[in-house]
Structures are given as structure tokens and as C-alpha cells.
Amino acid sequence: ARKIIIDTDPGQDDAVAILLALGSPEEIDLLGLTTVAGNVPLARTQTNARITCEVAGRTEVKIHAGSDAPLERPLVTAEHVHGRSGLDGPELFDPTMPLQDQHGVDFIIDTLRAEAPGTVTLCPLGPLTNIAAAFRRAPDIIDRVMEIVMMGGAYFEVGNITPAAEFNIYVDPEAAREVFASGVTLTMMPLDVTHKALTTRVRVEAFRNLGTRVGNFTAEMLDFFERFDVEKYGSEGGPLHDPCVIAYLIRPELFSGRHVNVEIEVTSPLTLGMTVADWWGVTDRAPNAMFMNEVDAEGFFILLTERLGRL
Ligand code: BDR
Ligand code: CA
Image (cartoon, rainbow, N blue to C red):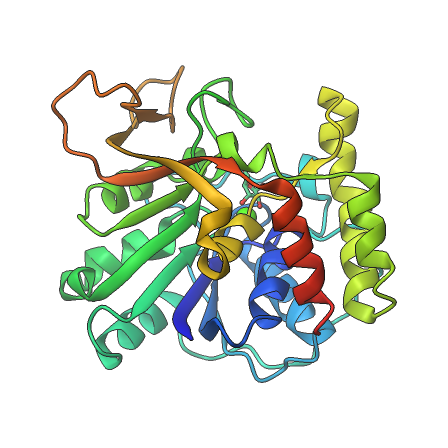
């Protein structure tokens, strides 16, 4: 199984990504979860990560709270999408499983130093603050990362927080710039892909029909989550962004894209956080990211339903 650290800001779609990983032990060895401020402030994202693991009955998962604000900017949150708790929809409870004492950034650094070089994959599902902070503090770990597979960015399908930017990159563009310039092998799940992984009624009912606690919890989260996109954009369902990252680790053949150069805008107020992808190769800038833009959505939801059914 592939060793991974999930760095996350749950978020209903983050929670589904965590559940997908927990339901896939043959392919995925989850070394730990680190939380970051993003969709909601840090106190909530770490609570939501613990709620998610408890719902799956997996209270042994190591959860470390990380950064509570972007590297160089005040935090921007997304309660308008995820609700006040970040995990609105199901009835929430106070989790009792422990939060680890160690800071998430230290956990990332120590884990990469302890494991054999080239064997740990980082899976950021929120702003890239923790990853960039770890790289800043311990540059020796950069070469030890196997790959970063992340949710973030957009090019043809631009803009869910501003007309030009996707939320995760917009919240901490300096962090994103550093990660994209790090030289680590990078695979992106941008809006171009995640807006093709929509939670239709039939797909949400398939989760509910599992008849399990995880299935009901997921359906209730997604009932709430889809409201934003359906009501605002008339889309047929909510985009299941973050689970695309974990699905890629299990079934890479579900996704396709192009290896291109991607640069992050960090100064322009108009286009802050834009992921400028050289899709047509019009510069001589070296490719630094695999930019996904297609997904077999049917296959993706079949995989997701099957794996959540194992929990
Ligand atoms: C990303 O932002 C968050 O709202 C979601 O959890 C996802 O990671 C989509 O832009
Ligand atoms: Ca997220």
C-alpha cells in the first residue's frame, strides 16, 4: 500500500476523501492526517477530521493540527459553501478521539525523515500552508517526497472564489508558489476535473442505500453540500473535489490530463491565486505539474460507493 499523509481542511468533500482513504487499506497506508485552516478556522477543521474518523470507527488515526493561518495573509474561509461548522448536513457531535500533541508541520517533517526516501506521498486537500511551512523549515525533506497529489487550481474552468482563482490556491498563494517551485513531482486535481465529478441525486442515494452510518453521514453531508452549486450555478450536483485526489491513488486510469508548466499569481489583486497553466506550450518554461482535466465520473462514483461500503 502507498504511504500517504492527508493534509486537510474538512469540509464535506474533504471528509469524503478521508473516508475513501480509510475504506481502501489495500492501496492506501494512511500515516496520519494534518489539518489546516481553510474552509473554516483550524479549531473546526481538526474537530471535523476527528468526527469523520470516528464515524468510520477509526479512532486510531493520528490527527495533528497544523497551521492556523496562511503564511503571509489573513485567513479567508468558505462558510458560504460548507456551513458554519464546515461539515453542515448531518447531526454533528463532540468527538472524543485524541488530537496528537505534535504540530502538523512537525509531523510532516519527522515522517518524511523517518520513512525511506521517495516512499511518502503528500495529499493536500486545502490551502498549501502546512506543506510550504514544512519545506521552508526543513528543505532536506523536499527530495524525500515521492509525489504531491493535490486538489487545487483551475485553468479553463476558472474561478470559484474569484473569477480567476480556485479557493485552495487563493487562500495561500505564497504557499502554493513555493510548492509549485519546489521541484517535487506534482499531480493536480483542478476544478477542470472536479467540476466533472458531480453528486447527482442517484449518486447520493447510492451512498444512503449502503444503509450504514458512513453511508448516511455521507449522504447527509452531500445533501447540504450540493445546495451551493445547484442553487447558485444550476449545476446538476455538487462537485466532489477532494475525493478525486484519493481516487487517483487507487485508480489512476480514471483520470487524464497534461504535464505542463503551472505558475501561481501572487501579486495582482485581480487574478491573485490564479494557476496559470501553459496548456499549449507557448513558453519555454519547464513542465512542473500533471494538470488533470478529465475524469471517468461514473467509474469514480462506483469506486467511491464501493469503498465507503467497506466501512
Ligand atoms: C476546494 O475548496 C474547498 O472548498 C473544498 O474542500 C476543496 O478542497 C475546492 O475549491
Ligand atoms: Ca478541502
